[in-house]
Image (tube, rainbow, N blue to C red):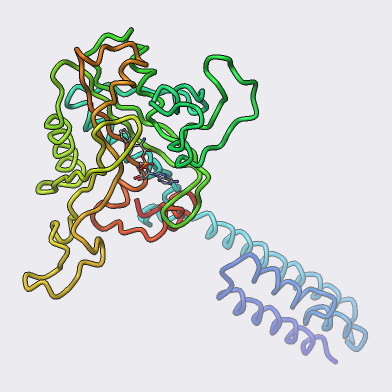
Amino acid sequence: MTTAEYSQKLDTVVTELKTALQSATSSETVEALKTEYLGKKGSFTLLSKQIKDVDDKKEAGQLLNTTKQTLEDMLATARTTAAKKLAWIDLTMPGKKPEVGHTHPVSQAMEEITHIFEQIGFTRVRYPEVDWDHYVFEALNMPKSHPARDEWETFFVDAPVDNQMGKMVLTTHTSNGQVREMERLNSQPPIRMINIARCYRRQQDATHTQMFHQFEGLVVDKGITIQHLKGTLDYFAEQFYGPGTKSRIRPFHFQFTEPSFEVDFSCQICHGTGYLDDAETQKCRFCKSGWHEVGGAGMVHPNVLKAGGIDPDEYTGFAFGWGIERTYTLKEGLNLDDIRLLYSGDLRFLHQF
Ligand code: FA5
């Protein structure tokens, strides 16, 4: 082969690489081309082995060196260009926002409920969630061995028994705060308490969890009647569920209130009618009856006032206690089939609130 023919072949390799590099936008492509041309089986490497067939080996050797240098320079330039492209940032592109968490829906409900009651002079308090039998049962007119204790599905704590206070339990309801609040105020009404806390019961199904939250209202003063209770329920219904929501009380039994009631709020979907249409042909699937039960209430039992050192001949009071989860999930549009979802830690669910 003549030197001129060899030189032409080398020029062809340079032209080919030049063309290939024009469309090489990433460092990876540039490196791949380097292997394709200068690697062990690369087109330049194979051509360099043909030097033995060239007439003037000395001139061919010089041509080879120059060509190799040209190829390496071209690759180096392409590498720098690709790296610059990587560092280029389009400042007008929409940014990626970091994930920001938010308050859990149950905490949101607690804040809202606290605010609603603070507006009418209630004070938010907290009492132990691991408490003595005395405050959870005994002082609430449930003496030892009273059958009413069975309803509370209690978790007992394996702790030394106190002679006066009895066993330790996980609080089954926020009513343990009633006598504690009377004691905190040295048995001196007026009392306007809102006690929000975790409660625990041996229960687990679509409407019950072993740990849940309740809020307890307690008002004690001279001349407090059921009318004050009903007014407070109606006020809460309108504030929490929206204008037009009504409350309803039905006779019930609790050991610590007399009389006792179950409390319902009118359904916001069917406005208490139980039907979705005026002709009353379509039953409301949200409530079925027009009303939702949220918890209990009643006039504080004289024995409970006495346990708190308050004279029942001088003072009367009302109390109510409802589940936060239940109260909250009844809000319009929240129709939750299973309250356990609230504690599932499933972010797809929690992100919606
Ligand atoms: C009580 O706990 C009474 N202490 C309420 C009360 C207070 C009555 C003051 C009178 C005066 P009850 O067991 O019905 O009552 O519970 C009240 C509400 O707590 C229920 O309606 C429900 O909404 C909620 N609740 C009770 N157990 C659970 C549970 N395991 N999981 C979720 N919510 C619960």
